[in-house]
Length: 148
Image (cartoon, rainbow, N blue to C red; front, side, top):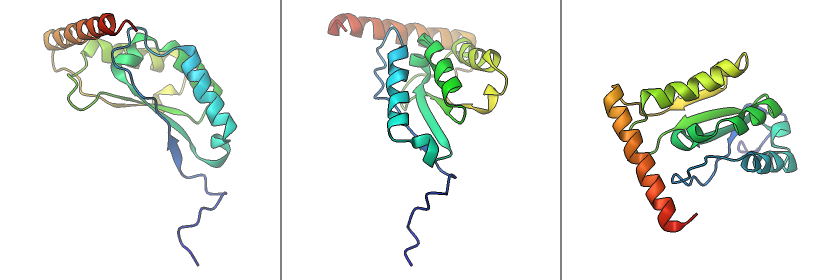
């Protein structure tokens, strides 16, 4: 017997579905981005055949617009978000980290268990503020250059 077969009744695995992150975005994710992800999940019945979906989302891009993710979490109760910073990316300021955390932890009961963090966070206010300012300025300048 092949031990690598998939039992359709085994709902112990979750799918990690992400976006091709465009970190120079000044607007963050839009509601249409999450609507398209929801359509994909429904089209392939992913929630019916798994323990859920994890969306890995870049912290800086997420901090620009968190509201579309509230709707997604409401629509898919077994979904989760993993907030991350990338390799080589400067640490996130403590204020940006708290903003994300407070948004999701205060919007609805039980969200604490559905939001995870894999972020480098600056150890002090000044360093974090400087990094955020530099990253925001770079993103803005790059966007002007590419006229996105």
